[in-house]
Image 1 (cartoon, helix red, strand yellow):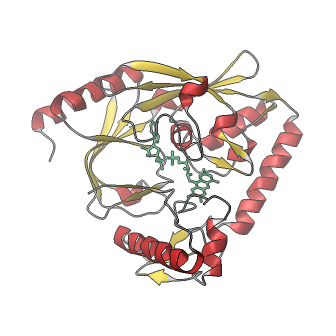
Image 2 (cartoon, protein in one colour):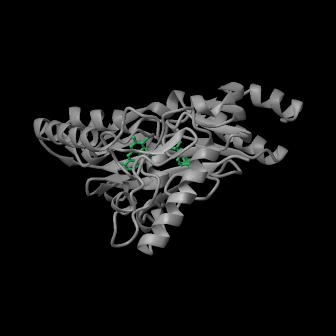
Length: 302
Ligand SMILES: Cc1cc2nc3c(=O)[nH]c(=O)nc-3n(C[C@H](O)[C@H](O)[C@H](O)COP(=O)(O)OP(=O)(O)OC[C@H]3O[C@@H](n4cnc5c(N)ncnc54)[C@H](O)[C@@H]3O)c2cc1C
């Protein structure tokens, strides 16, 4: 339960509040109990003030991007889910080939912005259904590209409302990891260094990658993408397939027939169904293949 005074002070900020919000509405898995409050923040001033307020009232907060890598528990999330919107959707061009993106913008928006200005470098991200902030946090990547290759600076706000910019090695990117992973900072701005290219070639590459996705991934079913990280020297999907687990079902969740690395929610799965299925896959793959799979998706909530 959120403190009444906290709610009053929260309401004074430039933000929209959604109390007892079902997280199933806010995640691509379509799973999750209620969050005490989803707070859609419109401005940097509001974000800083809200973070300070959370700190002062000891209210836990969690940043929600587009919810495409999240499994929220059936009991929901206590505290505040902060979602960046309003001015945080802006994308602008600086010095011909540097794209400055607010963290709430979508990767799709970034890809189209770059393509329309004949800028190459983010084609790999076309089809990843996340926000720019979420992609930097996760160092999202596909088809040989990752955020690490194109991001040159990231600005974030810490829990005291202080602003800090990270560049170069400070960004600490590695496979599905960044300097921001498991911190309580909120990424607000990201700069990308892109290269001049040919708009038609860029568009063709984007189309080609989207076709590959459509062919290989169950993109029309609710999921959070690849459940497991790529184990060194193996492909998680191939290991799961070789263990005969395609189509294996727990409750409403099943291992996708199309791509064994995906768990899909085809029949009103609960978070518990998905967690049980994950444990079962890990157990079988460990027993049969000797490989320990670890989760790429983030689990949150009670
Ligand atoms: C069909 C499908 C295909 C996918 N394909 C790929 C793929 O090819 N490659 C890939 O890497 N991923 C893929 N994903 C996973 C997912 O899209 C990415 O991880 C994406 O980057 C997550 O972004 P998001 O905005 O949805 O973040 P969320 O899922 O909302 O959050 C993910 C993490 O980022 C944090 N976060 C989000 N925004 C911020 C912020 N502004 N500041 C600080 N922390 C923040 C959250 O707190 C959370 O810990 C796929 C998912 C689906 C459903």
